[in-house]
Image (cartoon, rainbow, N blue to C red; front, side, top):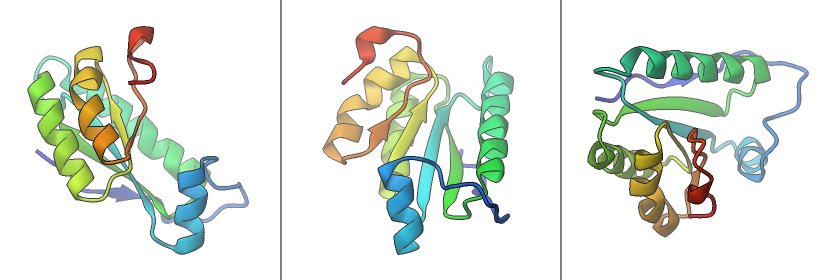
Length: 130
């Protein structure tokens, strides 16, 4: 299940989010969509929603209206994460943030084939560089 896009509408004197993609998005006006692949339902639904809320607040603090956070429900499975990542990439996301190690592993190839960046919230260092 995809939730509505949350986008910053405030302006600020703060610099844009410091990544090449964010700078390019701001200069071209294309925008940058960050997909959060989280188990928004079930056992980890509450913590997932809190992480999405925290990220949304961070976007508002940065004050860059070209950055959008879009949460996707992984249904709590690696297969669901792969489906969600595919949907996110098809809708233009170039940054994907999964919650669990299994999710990160299941979307690594999908993201690599689409030149999407994966920022895993897992503490499993064996996933680095996949």
